[in-house]
Image (cartoon, rainbow, N blue to C red; front, side, top):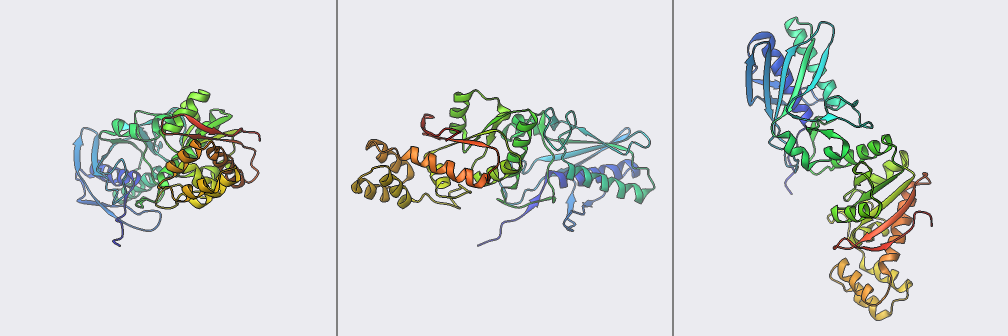
Length: 359
């Protein structure tokens, strides 16, 4: 199997662009390439796609290469414009076009600040300091980071729900994008929990997909900041809530996904866990199913077919799956003060089964 190619975070690209722009501001010339020391010791070199010198400012741009990861920002142009700042001010960050501004508490960046996360800020400060030392400058600058088309790209991310308006976030802790590591999604789940807690929400919904999320929102009328796009990462969501609890959690998902959780799987992706039809047959038997129905469940083509067969026979298999999923969730939460309920939602968005938060 061919190893997947790694790429670079928006934070690493922004750092390279900022270093190049500051060097051009001081010397009048852009470097041919910019080497960026990463936290893990790697030193990748970035080519410049944009070089612009203006009156009192310089702009450099780097095309983000996310490697083989299906990153929404792959191929985006990350821009840094650097201007001289007030003496003693150090590095001041500004949001350019396509980079969002934080409007809600609970994120690692203060309200009103550009959505540039702490690790990229640190990398850019260090890069500015290196350039300043090399050219005998003070390092007091305004660094404005932008992403071409970032406002449109941000609609495909969690940013609107997290209260980051106007564009993307500049992210990354290591500077490296690991293909299919899912780290960005899990980080977004954690930020979603942080924002919900900071907003004072006592009830949050963690859903496996849009259909189940809409069903839960219709049921409870919760604001967007109380909705967590859990996707397949049930374990990551529950483990973070165990450390950062909210009073009430609604887990919402389709029958197949919640069947996996009920069986103890914490990663619900089809490549990493499968529906156990034998176990579903055993649960159906415990709910009064006939041996004939159990045999048909074991031979079902899909979880959906198993659900339909049980429902047609009047066997409350979905309800049993909901109870078992709740049991697993409570085990993962490990006694954290979180009341849990589970909604099994069918493909039409109807609630097929439901547990209560206090059973």
